[in-house]
Image (cartoon, rainbow, N blue to C red; front, side):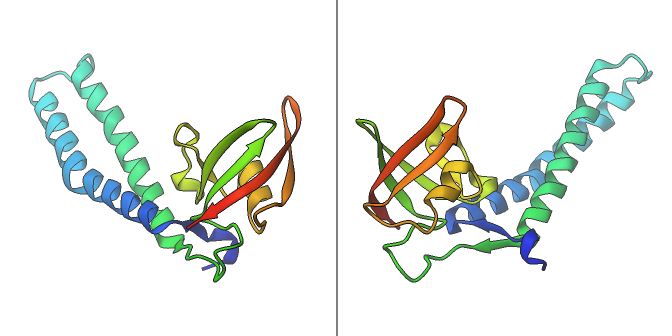
Length: 156
């Protein structure tokens, strides 16, 4: 495996990716194949919207299966880096920007979900945080200008 192909994930994230792959392969794929078969049995498929919808879903499912298999082939669980004092993938980090405090969970790119404050270690904020310690200040360039964060707490 090439170092640049490595995809870092948390243990929890890896389990979620494996579960999604299992669901797609064992449940969704057979389900959509059944729907396509039933739609074909209805006769002329040239104007069959159910057939078209099922084929479109099948295309999405197969693409996602391929993507997940590639992720899993290159996935490496990011253990803590030997120090609970330095931010890395898997860390929960409390930061202050201006007077507002926010907690972020640093995760691998496939797990990132900004709505849940799960940010990728590859994102501008995530990469700025990685390797830093409590008390450090970081600057992140954002569309609205430079943002300055102070690291308050690190948990794993």
